[in-house]
Length: 259
Image 1 (cartoon, rainbow, N blue to C red):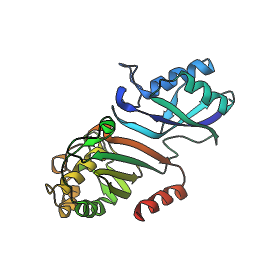
Image 2: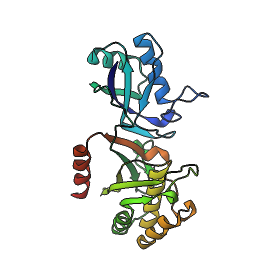
Image 3: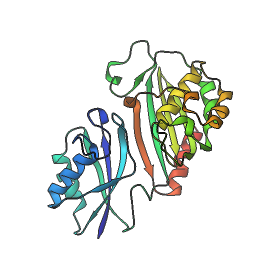
Image 4: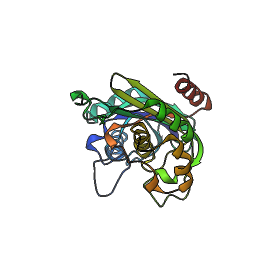
């Protein structure tokens, strides 16, 4: 058996999320599997590093592919990209160790959330940023982010009540402000359903004074979704990167902390 790692970038606007679904063909995984099956001549499935919700984008979603016969990676990448729609692009195909799995082998992920703070939104940002035309207190947001960093039960920050294991570790939270634009970076060992969007909405509520930074520990302790902020819209969220070694994870965390 040959194992391959496929790195994919996609605009999630037109799709019902990453994960294959029986009631729709408009999923990124489903479309990729369809064309890969066409190329290799048999029904083939791939495993993603995790789900992205409807409307969420990816700069670097990772997938694992298992094939009986070896492939020419460069030719396979070229073939696949020639068949895929223009809003899905394969960036890299590389052979991996036999036991590599896109989700199980991951040691961390980075999500980015992008926000436009202008009174009138920049026209070319409208599909990929959340328009939030309000002054925000960056220092208050940074203070709140420190309370969120670490290992916590994030029950207050997920919209899926069925999650049994709600403990996650946030290694770093980056807040970059530049020319009426805000980018939040979240690096963690894993994320719950809507977690990044709710964390983002909560930080924006802190930035506008609706929530005080000092309230964050109590919100975490409450394990009550009603205590946290609003879920920021899907269109501003990007799965940026998936980490498979502690070294690359540590480097990414260090870069955020040094900004």
